[in-house]
Image: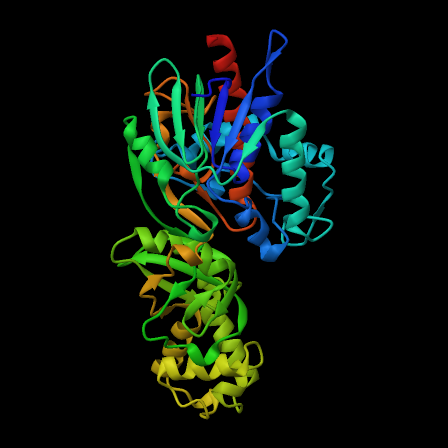
Amino acid sequence: MNSDWDVIVVGAGAAGLMAAIFAARQAVDGQFSRVLLLDGQTKIGAKILVAGGGRCNVTNEFVAATRFHNESDEAGTAQKHPHKTFVGRVLRAFSVEATHRFFSDAGVELKLEETGKYFPVSNSARTVLSALLEEVENSGAVLKTDCRVTGIRHEKNWQIHTSQDAFSAPALIICTGGLALPKSGSDGAGYQFARQFGHAIVATTPALSPLLAHPPRHADLSGITLHARLTLRVEKQSLTRYDGSFLFTHVGYSGPLALNISRHFARTKKAKIYLNLLPEVEENVNSRWWHELVNGNAKKTLVRALAMFLPERVAVMIAREAQVDGQKPLGKLSGEEARRVQNALCDLPLPVSDVAPYYKAEATAGGVALNEIEPATMMSKLQPGLFFAGEVCDVDGWLGGYNFQWAWSSGAVAGRSAARFALRSS
């Protein structure tokens, strides 16, 4: 068994690459740790390469703990003191500013777009992956690909059995991801390793995944994008809502708005999603807005009037959903008809039946319970020398670079901490 390692990192995705780099860079009393990075894939970085339409959305201008979700943090803390949550602590330990410095030093210049997203100036995800791989090599960490971990034991050190060889080290970092995009190698193996050493796994569901409608009631609107609001409710209670870009598809709904709300729908029983096509119109002025529309366009047909601010096909859909003749003059609508049209515009129940499965999802909700991990180090509270980082943890963020920021931050914290643990225990 090869025991010439201080830290072994399992999984060479975004978090694993970062963990290996920072573990290898960490020194204690002038001594640097020997780091081995293992991945079961022949070619690594699949998620990085497909992210952001092949451009890789590295991070976001508006990263905050409130834009991440988990179900095992301290109850109520996220809303009252977001900076004190598990995620908040990790983000402060390796911030967005630190991410910018890291990539700048690695030769990757980032540009800010109007959406608040940061992309490489090259507009190529390959730039990001190549820089990370170069930093792994420069750090002295050793990467072994096509090397699948088949078993883990803990005696004096961590004994890692793989498809190639067996290795040992005093510190082990699990960065195996979740279940999203399984073709990248994400198969949930990290959950099994965590369970093996006593960790609870918060039930997983797809996150950042398209919404499906069976049957697809609005398939005739496929390809239309609108600025809108989605609200998730159970009976009359609103649980969450998002504003943003919304896309009709031939099988349901997508776009940032649908993707962000998907994890909540997947995890909430009896939940329903409502579409508001006029999010800029406040509820208390809705009636005034409608009266102004009618007064200024009384002779126009309902569809023609709605088509002044909506695509015509959407205007036809609204009339259909409201069960009102779209060719009827706006000024001739009865009070009941006007009410139904307003409801269809601002509170239309969408026939969502499910979220798309993991192969369509960009992230996984659920994972290793955070209350069993120390946020200052990402080390297990149950098993000294065992660390976690990235998507394997019960953390998922909004669309727009948040999940990559979690990977960079948690990976850096875990890497540094694992190296310190290993070097001080040797």
